[in-house]
Structures are given as C-alpha cells and as structure tokens.
Image (cartoon, rainbow, N blue to C red; front, side):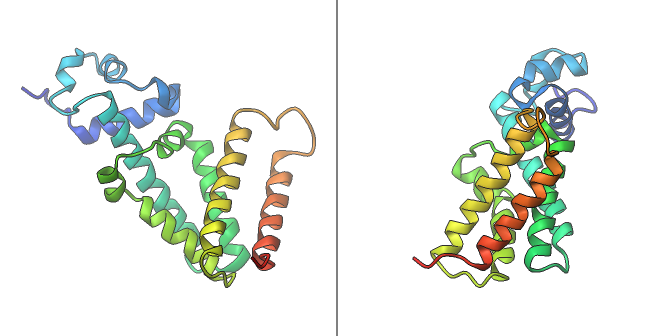
Length: 189
C-alpha cells in the first residue's frame, strides 16, 4: 500500500533537492527513504529503482532548464541570444548543481524522446539561425556550444579556475565574445 502523501512527483522533487545538497551520484532510493523517515520498500510503490529515480530527476532537470532557457531567449537574437542561453545554463548549474549533473544523464531512447532534450536542441539551433549557418556546420556549431558551455561550467564548478586572476566572470565574457566571433566568421569547409 502506498504511504499517504508520497507520490512519484513528490519523491522526484525531493530527490532533485537531495541531489543539489549531496550530489547527484549519491541519490538513491535508500537515501531518499532516510529523508522521509520510511523504509526503502515503502518507496517502491512509486519508484521502480534508484535508476528510475535518477531518470525522473534528469527529466525534471531538463524540463526546468528548458523553461529557464526559453524565458531567457524570448525576444533575443544574435550575440544577445547566445549570451542569454549560455548564462541561463551557467546560472542553473550554479543554483542546482545536482540537477545540472542529472541533466547530463544518458537516457534510454524512450525517456530521451519524452524529455525536454529536444527543446534544448531546438533552442540551440534557433540561436544559430542568427549566424546563417547551414548543415553540416550548424550541427558542428551545436556540438561546439554544448562542449564549451558544459566544459566551462564543469571546470568552474570543480574549482579549476578559482586559483588565479582574472575572475571567472571576465573569462566567461571573453569566451562568449570568442564564440560569437567564431560563429559570425565560421570557417569554410
């Protein structure tokens, strides 16, 4: 019998909050059960496994991030859109480190198809339309942006840039300037 007040949605939200507190890799059904003061078994009427919980957190994070990026992009184009997109990702990662990590989870094909991942790809391509890139260059640029944003965010959150000047905001701004310049002057194949 399901415990009163516990739902898959409530457990997913609590799991996302736990991920932000202790790290996505430490989120398990057992850890969540401890938070609710219940036995692990009582959560299995709502969740199939720890992997199911992690997938649900990843889907939540992808949706939250897509909503945030979409709001940031509204009415913007060109470099302004690029900066809004990048800053929305970086801010989300800073505010929700566990959820950001969850958004990187490799999903099975069915979960991926049902996720907000497609929205992320559409928004990235929408930014690139302002740079007049055609295929396959647009796909190369999507991969470049994802790699640079995720790489910088991961290194920054791990403390890799905290040991020297200039500050990370100055470097971030220069990275975005460089990406804008590259996208405006994309090399011919």
